[in-house]
Length: 279
Length: 358
Ligand SMILES: Nc1ncnc2c1ncn2[C@@H]1O[C@H](COP(=O)(O)OP(=O)(O)OP(=O)(O)O)[C@@H](O)[C@H]1O
Ligand SMILES: [Mg+2]
Figure 1: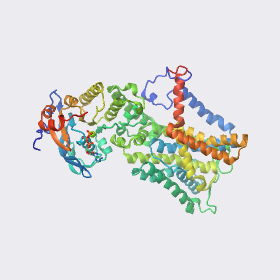
Figure 2 (figure 1 turned 90 degrees about the horizontal axis):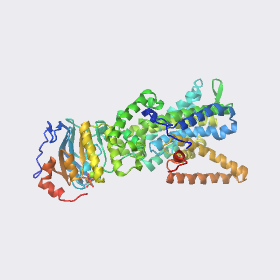
Figure 3 (figure 1 turned 120 degrees about the vertical axis):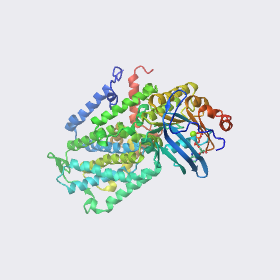
Figure 4 (figure 1 turned 120 degrees about the horizontal axis):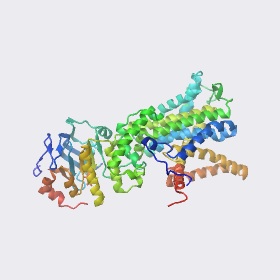
């Protein structure tokens, strides 16, 4: 596109960030994705990639198609055109649970927790992909099943400690306030030990303090576990602080792609997005 | 503070995962088991066995089965009566085809046959939900009753169209047939019931149970954490069928002795078991027992008070029972979907703090 910001660092070999982190090769490559709902084109011929170890932001006004993009990645929507390349290979259309099994975890814009279960059980569900004991072993609760449960519980407790939600472990999720629910949802996604973590507006509806906590957690996840993160966020301050590269969408099109600095100073982006106020 | 958890610290994750985390609960549980196995068989008589204890145990197994499907996995079923009939007829066919094999194996075998049938009838759940699934299972109910009436092979071409259980013994003690004694009937049902509860409890606290609950609470989110909805739903139908089949087999062979499918396993059975888990508590094994006990004991108590003491007409009492059950169903569905089990939990929590409520 004419005014698009140049794909500054989208080489597939990797780069080093301003704060000295080494970013690896492309793990997810979206090529010419077009997604239609009936007559509505939610995504129009969009291409961008996500590289190993980076924090990639997707921004854009309401209805720009950001969530739809994540839904394409996680297998909820099958694009009419274009290809998703994962780790150097074109990915056939997969069901969401198959995408999860490939090491891609996510959170939702409208929290999607299991309301009937405790915080601990919710986070434990994140480990389901790693629990393979057969029905018989589970039915009798014999050694291997019990060991598997304890082993996964330990992993989950580490994440519970990490996100500082020890105190609400046994609380039913339905009783939690909004901000904590968002955190529990992150915990559930992290429990799967994903390579790629997709966060759809992880800070929406939070107060300043909660946003700061959440930002810290996201940076720590990326730093300590080396998890690649793609996040959608409206708060520009947060985006500038967190992300290594930013994709800007508007009306289903990509209108910018680059480092936060480059994107922030791009006139097209400013016109389309930054000038418009969002909450 | 009679009931307390102070000083009851958990030092490992497996201890934290016990069925009865509190010591007092554990003691009460083992005492109940000991009384049930060692004392009750000595004192039980025909009336207690056939009016209360045996139906209670059998319905508790059916409720466990339905609760796995509906309470844990969120798939409504109105086919319980039909699936109990599958268990009953499978048991009958096995008993008559292999008279030398132990009746206990026939009952378990009937569970496996029902497992397969229930899984097949669970296939529509992959496409339809809620009300539509309920209607589909209702169709299964009517279809199965029709089938067992229609095809003489199922009742070995009996002139009466009924099935009746021949005498079968274990260690020389008759468990089926007219010579079965109350204590034997009770013990075999108790054993199956305790084993079912043990297995169901283990399944529901482990990873399979979490898969079911994830599907129940939000199937989209379940998929995104890697739960395959197909295997999760069908495994719930399968295990549900297993327990419901066992209960149907026991109901026919040990309890009734002879059965006619429409009468013994009609749509009212489906509703009875469904009401048991609603009143007892959806998604709770304890609730299966509470609900079964309540709905088995209620008519007995009402009859005792209404007919025997107050001298009311029996049909008035029968109608009163329907009104009470209907009212309770509405109350629990609206006010307390987790049923008696939740009321019990709340009461225990209050007791924990008592006498200092704040
Ligand atoms: N399942 C669907 N069926 C029909 N239209 C849809 C569907 N999902 C999204 N859309 C449409 O696609 C467009 C993009 O929606 P999307 O949710 O991806 O936007 P978004 O960028 O995430 O917006 P927001 O900031 O409000 O979350 C919108 O016009 C929306 O109405
Ligand atoms: Mg969105």
